[in-house]
Image 1: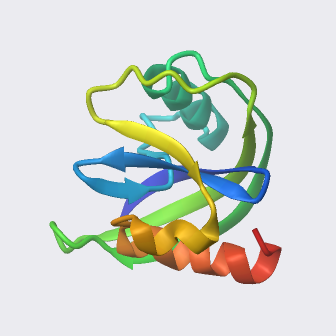
Image 2: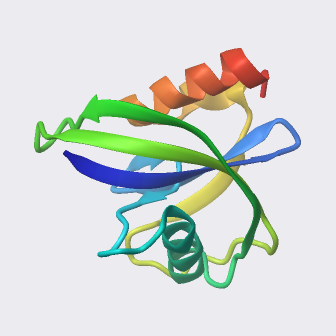
Length: 127
């Protein structure tokens, strides 16, 4: 099973989503070798959001899904975190990043697993 580490970054009742290949997702990445979840989050945020730092990192939950393209199983571990700087995109993979209020989710083409996670976050935390 593939594994990914994700950040649920919430600011003023909005959650950060990033756009990859015309689909909006929570920021998430694959850990390298023996890298811890926190090391993965910090490295990738720095690489893809250009110096954006994270703090207040805390584990939320784990979600399993089947990817739509490869049909492989994936486990996504979600962590709450705060950005310590502004977002400056620096990755060819991410074409946009913005904070989105739950009432605006229908306006975005959001991945299935991200919708599942967002719905649970909304129910449990009332974003």
